[in-house]
Image (cartoon, rainbow, N blue to C red; front, side):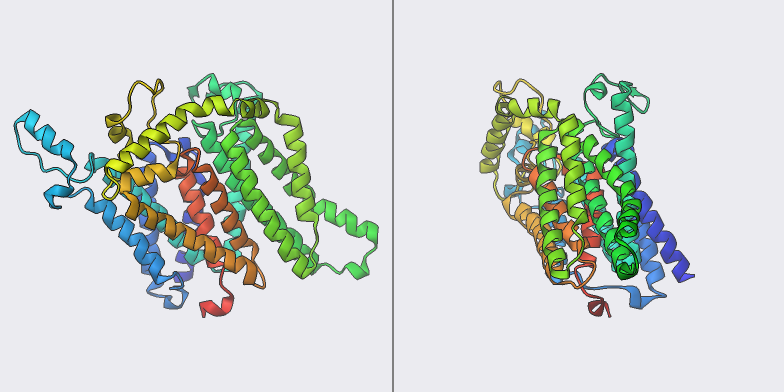
Length: 454
């Protein structure tokens, strides 16, 4: 019964991860709340069934990493309470109390409710990472997770291409002329979809590598002629190569400059690691050649509008540069305590002026926004947690004797979201954050040899 429950819970986790991008990237209150509720239920189920299978529980997550992440959660919660020292509370609470003529409890956060919502979302991402880590230590489940993610990315890419090429201008039952101009999949923002499809593309390349590597080890090339070996190779790679081609096409047709360059950075990291490890083990270079070839073909056929947008990079960046400057000014006013996790939309109104013509509810730089909301100490700790996990994945990619492609993908995915976070806010979309958490969880789990789990 415990094994059956374990199997069911893993499938529920996979469904949560692949369906999270479906309802507009889960960037709506009902959808991110539902995601958090389901993640909590799966975690509770995992805890209960683990009581009957204690040996399956892994404690290989570094204790400092756990403690640092919990410290960030604790600080985000502390920003919402009223019993902190009065000097910590934002002065706006006192000003508002004077105007209203009544006492207000006040807090560090300018909107405690928004901070609690953001805290819930961050905790749900941590639970997804934890579950993916626990299940990802088994080779079959790690491969299943990556296959589900690759298939989901392919399905969303096909949907986006159909809507774009068909000029339907719709996202489900919503109509918007913007959907005729760019591929957006199930996301309202094309840059967010570019990040998601980039993550799925990295996973697809990893799955492709695993498939080719396993087949090459299982085959008996000395007993087959050259023509037969080539024929078998083509039969086993044409489907994944077409999937990679279409996903790359969807990425380019988002016309997202940041999404394209961040995926390119992550892809180069992954291909570099694949090339280095394949040199060490003498494996086929078909994965590298095939992935690069289809990417070049897709770029040549579909990159005209993207290149035009790259030419306008300086002009379009002026507004964001002003937002960056205003955000830095705000951080200097409150560098330690922050304005409250998840409160940028409301708090930034105190600093914006006539220099900004457009409405900005995001900084378009996740690092600056986190520092603005959490303060320098807590934001630095959050960055450290993710960076530490990525470095451990890099170590696993270099040292593992097998299945090193998983930690290599985790490193590449971190580079992708890390680079894009410099220019946009895609990682703040729940559908993308959940996907990245699942990838990183599996990657970290496979960074250790099977002996370490015993």
